[in-house]
Amino acid sequence: QSALTQPPSASGSPGQSVTISCTGTSRDVGGHNYVSWYQQHPGKAPKLMIYDVSKRPSGVPDRFSGSKSGNTASLTVSGLQAEDEADYYCSSYAGARGVVFGGGTKLTVL
Amino acid sequence: QLQLQESGPGLVKPSETLSLTCTVSGGSISSSSYYWGWIRQPPGKGLEWIGSISYSGSTYYNPSLKSRVTISVDTSKNQFSLRLSSVTAADTAVYYCARLIVVVQVDPWGQGTLVTVSS
Image (cartoon, rainbow over all chains, first blue to last red; front, side, top):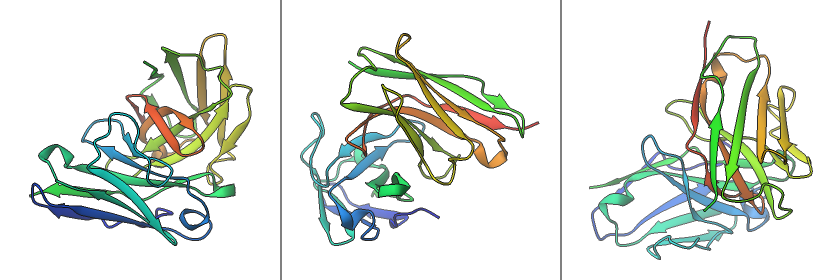
């Protein structure tokens, strides 16, 4: 059982927007702004998409955005494209527990 | 461009020790700005942080694995290593090495290496 809770699946049609949630507690997600999101295509290593809740690394399209409210962080993918189909994982600093991940969400582009 | 590459046996027997090395190229491991870590992913499952180390040797381990994990760094070789003792089938996973920037900003990742625990 993962420390952070994500929906197992999400979907949307090309051009639409999809939001993936990541729920933790005040000891992790809600306690600071160290939340990251990763994209993982089958057979590949994860790729950093969002860090510090809402910041994008260089090279990540601005279609990807992050936010947080209380103990829940969210990743929104706008203008869905076929190549966005992948697994997405959230991650948070959790104090003495170190780094914790969500169970992952499989995003399907219909 | 910083790159990381895992190396080590792909098959380990139950109760033995899993040993992996990560070689960093395109940059120095001796930077006070970063930590270096190991993350694993059992087949078909999610990600699990194993632990992290600084260039000076300061370590942080997942509490659930702490009794079996040792992470070390060799700055002369620009490498860091993972040892996981008393392995069982539950330790079968793809093991990734990675750079950690400010705690949970993991970038980049190595390509990963599958380690199977089986007799």
